[in-house]
Length: 245
View 1 (cartoon, rainbow, N blue to C red):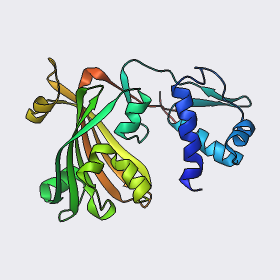
View 2: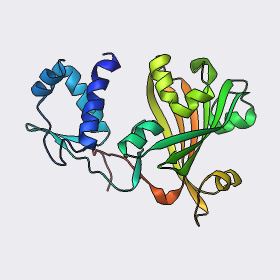
View 3: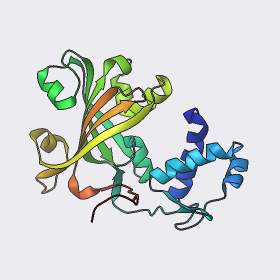
View 4: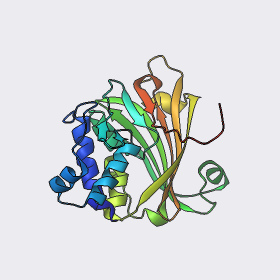
C-alpha cells in the first residue's frame, strides 16, 4: 500500500490527539466512521491506527475500539521507538524549532569514519553539523553522515529545514529502520561552544544508524542533548509465552 494513503490519516489523527481534540482515555471513532470521514477503506484506516499504536498514541481494546492513551508532558520528549525528524518532534511538543547549519561538507569515509559510522572506507558521504534550538534555546548538537549515492542533492538550505522531508518527498526514499544506542557522555569543547550547558558536564547522546526499505544504511547520526531538558520515551509491549522472571 502506498504510504501516502494512510500517512495523511495518521498525521491528521496524531495532530488531533496531540492537540486534545480527542481527550486522554477517549475512544476514537470506529474504523467504519473513520473510513467514511477520510473517504478510504477500513484497511487504510487500520494501517494509520497501527502507526499510532506503535508510537504510543493509542491502545487497541479488543471488541471495544481504540483508546487515546497520549498524555502531553511539560518536558520535551523525543521518542526512541519511532523515527521522527527534529521538526516533527518540535511540532509534537509544541515548540518552535530552529536549525543552524554549522558545517556542510562532502567527504570520503576513511578507516576512522568506517569504524564510527559503519560506512565502508572510500564511501562518498555528506557530513553535516547542526545546532538545534527550541523556543530560542540551543539544546541539541547533531553530527550527521549521509550516504551520497542515496541522498544526492542535499544542500545547506535543505539541512537547515528538514532533510527527511527532502528524502521522502523529493527523492522518494522510504525510511524504515533505525538502530539506536543511548549513552551519557562528558561534554566536548564543541558542546561547550554551542550549547547553553548551565552547570552540566555531560550530554545525553543518541547514536543511530538508519536504513531504507532495501536494507541500505543511508544515515549515521550522533545527536547530543542537554540532559535536563529532555525526556526520552518508548512504548513496549509484552508477548506472553517466553521465559524470564
